Image 1: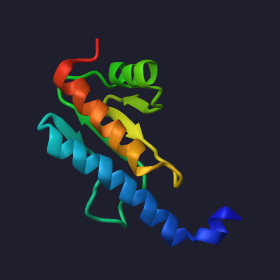
Image 2: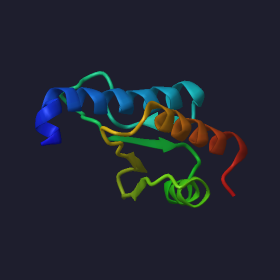
Image 3: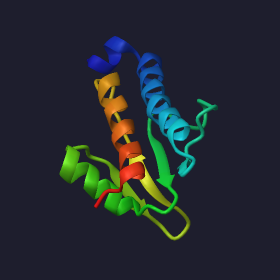
Image 4: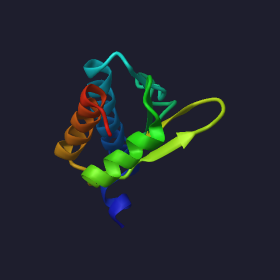
Length: 113
């Protein structure tokens, strides 16, 4: 009922907005960040985003975000790529997305040990 009430296109637009907000913040905040999700083509990606930080283990970063900040992410380590999948929901707030991005950048600057 909720999905029908807001409509699929509005939901998709909200999810892309949230993804773009954290992804662009990370890209602007550190040259070590690589976003592996296409941001400029809405036909190729929805609200889910995937990023990696050069020199940082995604499993350790994900564990740090969960243990220290209660932020749930999905670290993925594969022979072809590795990084962290971020999956906000429609009800995820802008403040939550901004906090996530700031914490990742803090972890890059000061370490996650």
